[in-house]
Amino acid sequence: MKLHIVPARTGLTWVQLGIRAFWRQPMALSALFFMTMAGMSIANMVPLVGPAVALALLPSATLAMMVAAAEAMQGRFPTPALLLVAFRTGRQRLRDMLILGGLYALGFLLVMGLSALADGGQFAQVYLGGEALTREMAEDTDFQQAMWLATLLYLPLSLLFWHAPGLVHWHGVPPVKSLFFSAIACGRNAGAFVVFGLAWLGVFLLGGVAVSLVAGLLHVLGLLDAAIGGIMIATAMMMAAMFFTSVVFSFRDCFEPPERPGADPEATAEPAPAP
Image (cartoon, rainbow, N blue to C red):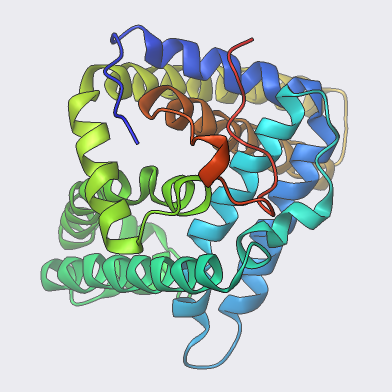
């Protein structure tokens, strides 16, 4: 496995490729993303361990979207079966993905625990779905400090796990080593990832403005507020699906493709080749 160093402008290319891949199969990729989020929401409702189980599923959900994007770019239809891709590529891969999911859950809960030092755990309870956000909470200084602390702490956690699912699935790298290689790849290509993040921020802002304008127009025309809310939620889900679709292109450009003799014969799509 060889690490590639890419120019900063490549981050913008990843965004463009993610959007292009999404629009090749918009309904299928939107449905897959919705099903992954629905599955995590259902897991979150399990008493006591629900939030941890839902968090542990995120690396597998990320991998499913990566494989689905690769399928779309290769002209194939991404089916719902891809949701289980992390769990049907052999016992070793299954074990490694479960370990990776457990490590992510532990890391995220640690971030939430540290944020609780600032506000006594209010932000953590809201974020994990245990408490409704009120205006008083949002305006509370301690709550805001906890939110920013969690954001800063989550950044290194996300870099550790950014490439890890792909490294485990396509390269057979052990979970802990995959975290190390992921962090190194993100650090060595920091410029590209900064551009990638800023570009997606711009896309989300433009999308938010466009949806707000459309919602305002529909409200003036007398459309039900519930319908407007549904449009806004659907648009947000679609843009989030686009974001996750773009992840595979950053993985593809940061690492040498696995050699065929050592590749897992049961693994579903490899990272998409350059168009």
